[in-house]
Amino acid sequence: MAGMPPRRNFQLARIFGIRIGVGISWFIVLFFFIFAVTEPFHKMLGGSRTTAYLVAVASVLSFFISIVMHELGHALVARKSGLSVAGIDLWAFGGMTRTSESTSPGVEFRVAIAGPLVTLGVIATCIIAGRLLAGQGDFFDVAVARGGVRATPALVWLSWVATINTLVLIFNLIPAFPLDGGRIAHAAIWRATGNRNRATVATGRAGQVFALGLGALGLWGLAGGDSFGPLTVLLAFFLYQAAGAAVVQGSIGQRIKNLTVADVMDREPVTVPAELTLLDAHDQYFSRYRWPWFAVVDPSRRFLGVLREGRVNDEISAGRPALAVVDVLEENMPVRIDEHDSLESLLGSEGLGRLGAMVAVDADGVLQGVVTLARVRRALGAAA
Image (tube, rainbow, N blue to C red; front, side):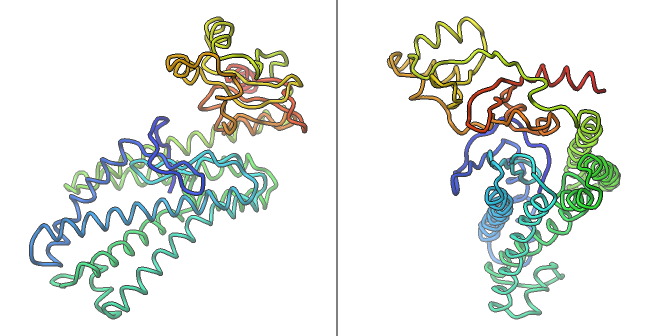
């Protein structure tokens, strides 16, 4: 699953050290699905509506758990391939794993295919369990909601989870960005042409065409009174936005491919010494420069992590102003980049988008400079 989740969400869980975040829209769609399937389930189950409602809740929650499993497939393969994983975001139209840029077509393919393979495993597990429970014919009759069919709660649950995941798998493998199929196609085109930006533009264009078609389908459904019509139109809108952003990124990437981080970074950025107290950091840096975070360095200028203003204020308010900066800095923020990396690699970076800057270091981890969003924009403006 893919898309453009909201920037702000809250942590639902942390699995294998990976943050799982959810936005409000996720809960809206969760309740919509429960409402939408309760009545069809009641027709298959008979009996009380309470039973149908409970099966609907269990089924929809199982579906969203399978989405988390899908995204964990992406995340764990990315981490094994040497990419940094900032977290997983769940939102109205599925999930998105936030990782650093793939370093090769092979890495991108492995990361992209991992999620669909997990989904395929979920489908196979549900089918096997359902057939053992009720036999092949009964399972597939329930899965396609054949008229008049009756089933047990367990069979309805397994068949629905298998069916919805099958539909998601087919949809997600369409070769259009930002779907997984688009990322797989991106890896293939990148490998065939040796040009990452050309692959990005091609799959982005395909994504735009697909989104327009999906939007037209949604409008047709909306005119016919289909309850899923508005969601389809909204999904098409977000897919078109994401695909358009990819086209812009690929086009600009062609023009800036020879620029590196070192070409645009500030070589004398303001940094905070690790041994400084929080009170001094507040008075000498945050109050003076009005920046929400600073890079923290040791006496050898090795980059240690990020100090956030919010954390400093919280600790001071809690009566701990004498704590050292090194005690509260955040070491795992996705802001580190090599000074020799291409400027193009910055465009999709997590740190630049969320924090407004990236910290350039050398092979020994010594801070060499800071690349701010303003500097990147100036470079992009010159290339446009």
